[in-house]
Structures are given as C-alpha cells and as structure tokens.
Picture (tube, rainbow, N blue to C red):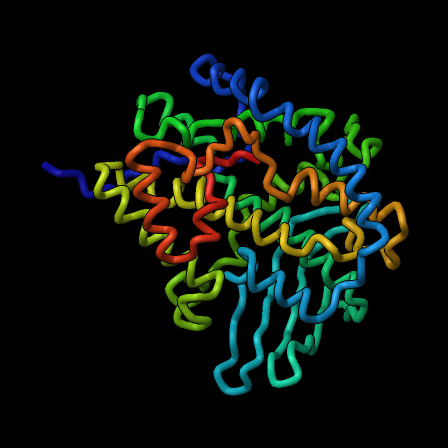
Length: 360
C-alpha cells in the first residue's frame, strides 16, 4: 500500500552545516588551492582601489535606494498599491544584531515613481522615522546582505553533500567552494562577521553584523510570507529583476527535465547557482556610494567610507579565479551549456555572471 505521508525535502536549510567531513575533504582542498588565494590577491587590490575611490564617493539618493531594492533580491518584498501606485517594503520581524548592542527589529519604506523620478515618502527603523539617506541605504544594505542574500546560501551545503554522496556527475561543478566558504565565514578569524577573536576589523573589511544573529535570521522566513514569485512578475513585469528571476527558474526547470536531473533539486539548485550570483551582481552596481556598514552611524567618516568600500570590493563584488571561474558559460558540459543558452534568451548579461555554485 502506498504511503500518503509526504516525504520531507532531502535538503536542510542550514548555512552552518559546513564541517569538513571525509566525503567533502576534496572540495575543501580544491577551495584552498584555487579560490582562497583570490581573496588575498583581491584584498590588496581592494585596499588600494578603495583609497582611490574615496575621492569619488557620493551620498545615496532616493533613486539609489530604490534602485538597489528593485535590482536585488529585496525586490521580492515590494508590494504595490494598485490605487495610488505607491510601493512599500516592510520587514516586521528581524533578528539581526549589530555591534554596540544595536538590533534591527523592523523597518518600513514607502516610495513612488513618477515624472519627477523616484521619491521616498517614508522610512522607519524600529518604529522611528529616519530621514538621512545614508542611514536609509545603510539599513537596507545591512538587512539585504545579512538576511535576504544569506537565504540564497541556505540550501547549498545540503545540495553539495547530495551531489557528492550520490555521485551526481552531471552537477559535479555545482559542488565546488560553497561549504569551505561557509566554514570560513562562520569559523575563521578572517571572517567578515563580528565575533570575539575576529581579525577582519583590523584588515579594513570587518562588518558590523553579529555572527550568531545571522544564523538566527537565516531561518526567519517571516518577511517572505505572502510573497510569491508569480505575483511579483505580474506586478512589476517580466523584464524586472524579479520577473527575470522567475523566468530563469522556469528555464532551469526545463533544462533539468531534459537532462534527467531529480526535480527535488530545483529550488536548491536555483538559489545555489542563479539567485546567488545574480544577486551579487546587483549588489556590485552601487559601488560609488558613501555610507557606513553600521546602520546606526549618524555620519560616515573617512575610515567608515574606506571600510565599506573594501568590504564591497573584497566580499560583495564577484571574485573568481580567471583560470577556474566556474561560470556556467565556461563549463563545457551539456547541462551547463544548455542552461547558459536558455538564460541568454532572458538576459545575456545575467547569463554571463551565473556560476555553477556559490563561489564567493
């Protein structure tokens, strides 16, 4: 008799499931030999380039804040009022904490677009009005990097273990880097996250977010409740960031069917490859703004601007080994080439930045 009990997903949404167990030791070795050195090289470049950028940084505008939201995974939180045309982004229950004893509990942004461009109508953080555009951008950036973007990493560790343990040769390239990257993020003294013993604050790229709060927030899906990809597409159009993401998921599903890949892998693979890399690309488009990584800094000092710039160049901008980039366009295997062709039909630039795994 067939059981009516629904089988649980084989993928656990845990970014901290990144221990170097025997079955994945080869992945850690590959990472330390091929990808890890890129961060040391990029750090030198990030420091020098950030010193140069200090002469050109400018304060964020309303257009910058809204543009960032609409062209990253923050777009999935936008709600539009059909009568007024105003848009709103609301986060009611956030677990993130920053150094100095600060906590981001909630935030709300309302804006509209018209003949005169973009206008932010209201912004609150923890129930308090905020008018300073740099603080607004810093708060949105803080939440996006540590909550919305982090969720694109959630299924990577389990997916990698599945690929390795089941010897899924078609997806071998999708097993690279993710787990050792997460291990460094959560356990290395060189991690960007804030915790006792962290050294990154002395190297110019330290972040303000408390490590333990990221783990707690990564499992918090309350902000996404009631938001559906199909609805976002219909609301904003198929050529918006959200619309392209939804279409790329459909493309991935079709390619997986053609190559006989287990459909249970769809959402994990979608986040692991497309969402993660495209979101990083969206983040990197705002590299000339002056703001602090700590949302509660009233002013952005010269060092804080430098710190933000080093963090962006080193951590948020795509950082790949040119000899082994692991972009789907560079992998000469039927599945990845098929996916690349389908994604190019949606957006050639997007297709070019998609990697086979979480590489940075």
